[in-house]
Amino acid sequence: MSIVYAASIDGTVSLDDKDPTGGAPSDHDDIRFTPMTPIGSTPSHVVFNNQTYTLKNVHYHGLAEHKFASQAAFSPLEVHLVHELDGPAVGYVVLAVLLNAGDTGWSEHDHLLHEPPSTVGTTKNVYAVNLQALLPPPGNRSYYRYTGSLTTPDASHVYFKPVNWIVFSQYGTATQSHISGVHALWGPNGNKRDLQNNPQPPNIYLN
Figure 1 (cartoon, rainbow, N blue to C red):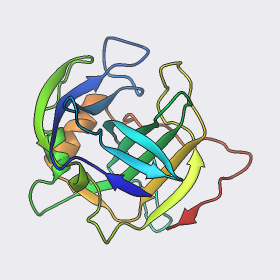
Figure 2 (cartoon, rainbow, N blue to C red; figure 1 turned 60 degrees about the vertical axis):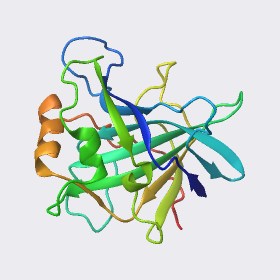
Figure 3 (spheres, rainbow, N blue to C red; figure 1 turned 90 degrees about the vertical axis):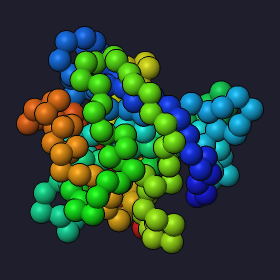
Figure 4 (cartoon, rainbow, N blue to C red; figure 1 turned 45 degrees about the horizontal axis):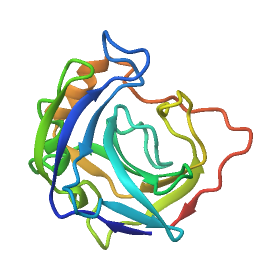
């Protein structure tokens, strides 16, 4: 897999509103960054199995939706960088990073999580986002890979599958104040999708 991201990109952060729309945030809603690719520029993308998937959005779930065997509890946040297959066929690659509270100052995640919209469907502009900094540093990007499904419904209101999941083994960080701000939007149940029954457990590979 190769990751080809713009060095700096502007966009919008929204409290994304999915069915059921309106009212208080539902567990299908999320805090979402949508990049705006300048005209004439190549969109940020990944190449996976010789196919190109364009970055569509970056969004957050709290609590996390993945958990490593060594963890006693789920991380307080998880970020998903969602890439969609170029062309008429439908397909996804999702890069996932588990986020814990950090004590070394702001991370790039704090750049996106600072004062997000609190009303569903509203947006604000953000500038100069470093997409690479949302991931573990280059050279330390080992990951688990498996085939699963989306964790929020797609435009057709289904949890599309198969989805190529890449879950990085190194944690990221956000400040406790921003983690608490995300949790406050949803309350104790958060906006994560619960673990699903799977009659045939997926094969998981470590890269």
